[in-house]
Amino acid sequence: MTSAPLEPFAVTIDFATGALVPDPDVLDRRLADLDGYFVADIDDPGVGAYTVHEVRVPPTGNNLLSSTTVLAPGKVGDEYFFTKGHFHAIRDRAEIYLTLSGEGLLVMALEDGRTVTKEMRPGIANYVPGHWAHRSVNTGTTPLVFYAVYIGDAGYDYATIAERGFPVIVVEGEEGPEVRPNPRYVAS
Ligand code: PAN
Ligand code: ZN
Image 1: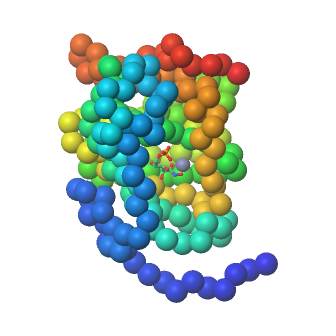
Image 2: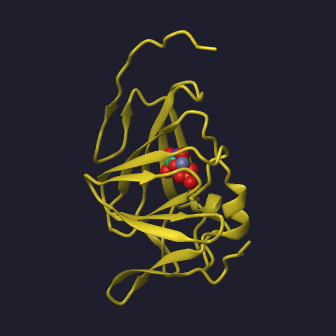
Image 3: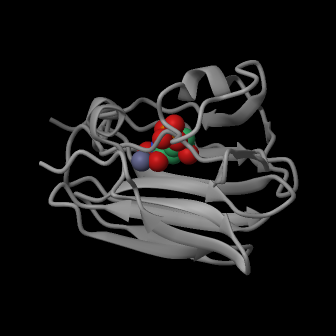
């Protein structure tokens, strides 16, 4: 079945702040929402971690959903702030992340525990194929802002990551960010 055409439209993206115009759907994640995700305990659960600004289109397989994410700089213990991370509910749905400002790492993991970590900085478009869980990590001192485009019916499976964690963590080492095995990862 084909659906009726949508009306073409445009949004304006502020590359520095991630704000959209129009900006109808903004999700606000605090450290409290990341309780249990870091190795160390969270000192102040009220601190803002990231916002997600969504472009409003129907979440169907014939549309492309997109959003900006604005991830604050900071650390919990030695770990840099990160997004929760997820598999797509429909596992084979792919996604592109285009970094607009800041710097970070994109950590991707398969269900069997294999990981790939890629740099995020302005101008880099990261391709996240289906089946790879993905989490962005802000390793810089300014907000990490990126634009994500994904197949509309992808959906989110947060539970698998919430229960098992990612196989690796990103910590501040002597000479900058280091990717290390996650001592709390629960292998399948
Ligand atoms: C992104 C993410 C966004 C926030 O739009 O949803 O960066 O990360 P979490 O969803 O893991 O909290 C995306 O990957 N959408 O599919
Ligand atoms: Zn995704």
